[in-house]
Length: 342
Image 1: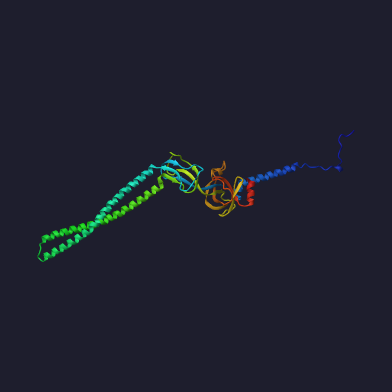
Image 2 (image 1 turned 180 degrees about the vertical axis):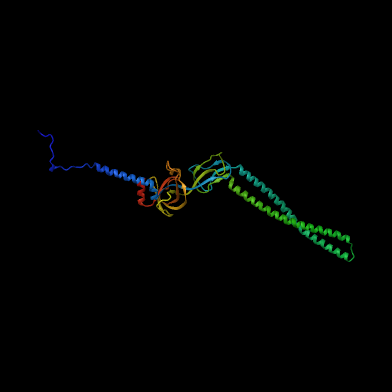
């Protein structure tokens, strides 16, 4: 019977070529596992091991607000516009302040009139005082002459009685004038202090009111306009938000990390595909709540320590205010690591 299959001799086996497809798959699988492990480790522990922070580009912020209730009459700025120091931002009108100015002016006018009256009386008392003193001296001389005449038998006591009464009246008028002179002088001094205090208050109210013109404290960019002509604002309501000065980064770092930060440390700031160089200028001793854009969904509201970073001059184009940026330690390795992890 003829065999249908030729059997391979045991002593003459052919070399088998193994399939390499399984080896490549294994390497790809291991690589994916390593990348996944790095990603998980970075997600949960990266902030404690690597210096990096999220931040915002900011400028110094000023608010146009008033300490009284007022009506908005004119708005001289628009959002995104620029304004010079001292230029008007908003013009308001406040019945409350106008009444206060009127009342202070009325009180001041009444006190000034009272001061003029007191000064007039004081002037008269000053002018009469020498005559009163002379009269008192003359009456004293007459009384002494009359007493000598009575002693010599040349006059009677009847005339002496009248002289004594006249001398008494002259002395009383002299003392009254002296007392009035002192009293008027004290009253004038007191009323001058009151007038000076009221005038200072009036000047301060008028200066703060400034005819209702709210002016820019610095050369600024208008970030937000919250009112329109006809709006009614209450005490402390912000009408316009202004940004001025050089841009800086306010960054939020994870407290309790294993790395150390210090003022003067150089950092790199990433935004989009661009980067800038910066320096940590201040480390605030406070842990603040992160802005909404830095919070993660389905997690409690995070709090992080705040650091301030100044942007190095001529380091590149500074992004617009409120741009979200990433901050890492300066150096090529950190550039590569930041790019790999993100």
